Image 1: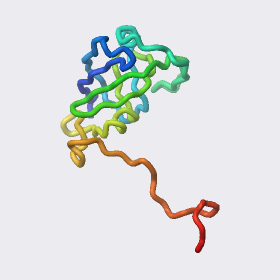
Image 2: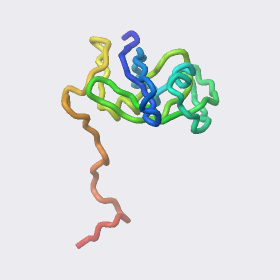
Image 3: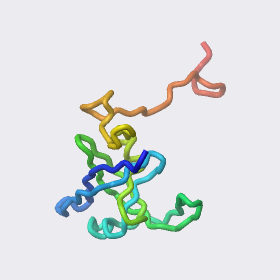
Image 4: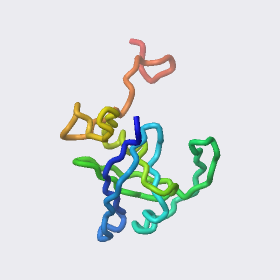
Amino acid sequence: MGLVRTELRLSNPVIPDLAALDCRAIADAGAIHLCIPEHVAIQLQLRELEKREVTLADGSKRLVAYVGPIKVQFANRQCFVGAMVLGDEVLLGAIPMEDMDLVVRPLTQDVAVNPASPNIASSIAKRVAAPSRGSCFSKN
């Protein structure tokens, strides 16, 4: 499978009058976060919230700026996330993809809204499991 790319709209919800950016992104379900190049962070006037250590594909570690909030839009979906300032192109990781209920389709090499929930994003808020010992449930 080659690289899967998709179109996103990125904006700064703190400055709603600032123009949004339409950009091409690599969709990588193996990556965790949204990563954006420095020029995108500058154009969207995103505030650095902190520094974070990231592990790159080669195993090396680097300290990068973590900025936000950033509004991500795809088709009829949107989410609000932070982003790592890293690399030379936008990378859409698992957190925003899960938040918007998107799927990567390897056969067609594209990204789509989840066909099981095409009209509204669906999510799992908690894992349903049997009560464990020491839980708050009584044994009546």
